Amino acid sequence: MIAVELRKLARRPRTWATLLLLDLLPTVVAVLLAVTHLGPRPGQGPAFLSAVQANGALFSVAALAIVLPLFLPVAVAVIAGDSIAGEAQGGTLRYLLTRPVARSRLLVAKLISVLVFVLIAVVVVAGTGFLVGKLLLGGQPESAATVVTNGSSVTSVSGSTLTAGQVAVRTMLAIGYVALSMIGVAAMALLLSTFTDSPLSASLGALAFLIGSSLLLTLNAARGIAPYLPTRYWLSFIDLFRDPILWRNVERGVLLQFVYVVVLLGAAWANFSTKDITS
Amino acid sequence: MIRTAGLTKRFGQVLAVDNIDLDVRPGDVYGFLGANGSGKTTSVRMILGLVLATSGTVELLGEAMPRGGRRVLPKVGTLVEGAAAYAHLSARANLDLLDASGGSAGRRTRRRRIDEVLEQVGLAGTGKRPVKAFSLGMRQRLGLAAALLTEPQLLVLDEPTNGLDPQGIREIRELLLRLNAGGATVFLSSHLLTEVEQMCTRVGVLDRGRLVVQDELVNLQALTGRSIVHTTDPAAAVAVLDGRVERRDGDRLVVRADDPAALNALLVGQGVRVRELVAERRTLEEVVLERTEPGTDRVPS
Image 1 (tube, helix red, strand yellow):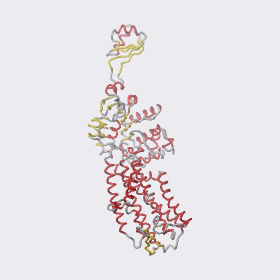
Image 2 (image 1 turned 135 degrees about the vertical axis):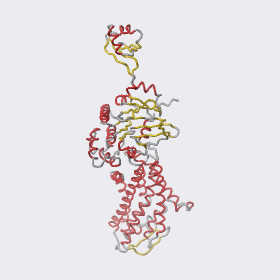
Image 3 (image 1 turned 30 degrees about the vertical axis):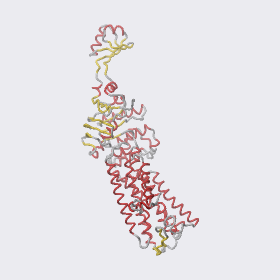
């Protein structure tokens, strides 16, 4: 069933259009930077963008930071929100279930196909970022990338240098962390997808959940619940590029995503396995 | 093949299906009749385990549903409330995905089975055309092809001729009867009386969620105790029959007579020339109208 779901995903033109669009924004940013040489001052604008002026190799991480707040969650919410609700709306859900495909198996297969999409999306964005960074922004000597990190409010420079090998490893970790952050979105959209027969409602519902979380994070009065909000640690992958790596927020981010995923998927399973399929 | 006991479904305040005991036997072509909104589709969905019953049980090919679905559903072909397919894919790609999803009779025979069913339903020539370019009738044929893909013992079909033209309806009817002759049991839900009358051996009639009739079609089409006589000499016939004529339209007489043969002998013996004489049977329509109330889509004030 997993193979079938992956085939369905691969044969949808929408999947490829989404990946293309995800790559477009970082590429446009890179082109603009290369043409104008007007990078944001350190500590302002999207993370890492001030650093990539010096070294294009870091642009893969900068590309992730560019798509992470909105583009990537939108893409994931669209694909995951469509998973069950799309089959329901198209009427194919009843034919899958009477084939029969066990409901829990269908849910797991859908989840895995979404995860594969997330991973491919993140890797492709990072890869494209790396390529356009190399091509357009060029590189300083690879051995000495000066890493500028985007601290809480003021510019903070760790100052030390990272070797190319270290940058590569940390970029891999960052890819993994960003992918994991998206699983929470996917789980939320999947849960909503089991409740409604409209894929649009499921996707928008998941996005509302994220926008709500981001909004609360800006509110002083919500500080008490901030550590439990799903988007709280999203940008913590930046900490992977400090020297030494600041693991605390990354660890909390991983744990928090894990809790969200377990709870949301549990709810999705409980709902879907006992639901009357009237679509 | 299908047996339900006290099957009931309540959606909130609405009692959609009320305590029905269906009995579909091997070899039947069972017609499940009912007006729109009478609970046919909900019943079919409960039989297939899509909707969970509020109370009562469903037995499908000897297994309790929905628990036994994993074992018996591969032997059941379904068409529920219209066909559905992935619109951007071809007919063949759709069937291929569906067969790979589950309940398959095997990957090695997949290609052959897909060729066969596409041929059977008359879609063999659609090639790479995506389903979104299909007409309603073609989509319905594809839905039937999907139902036939696993060479099922039982076909559960909800309004299978929906969207087909008269030729298509006839073609599908002949296909279903051929499959039935080959040993498959057919359970067919419809609101079209003529369709059921032409095809089915057994009939169940649903009215507002209750099963009001379940019997062999021949028993329902019982003799009425009247004969219809066409004669070239109606006035003489009326005189001979003396008060037994219930109605007269030109040369067509409706005559009370338990034995049509005796009636014929009497008329001919008296020199009345009979052009046509037939024992009157009740039509399915009469039975259904007699046992059901006006449709549920009428909402009087």
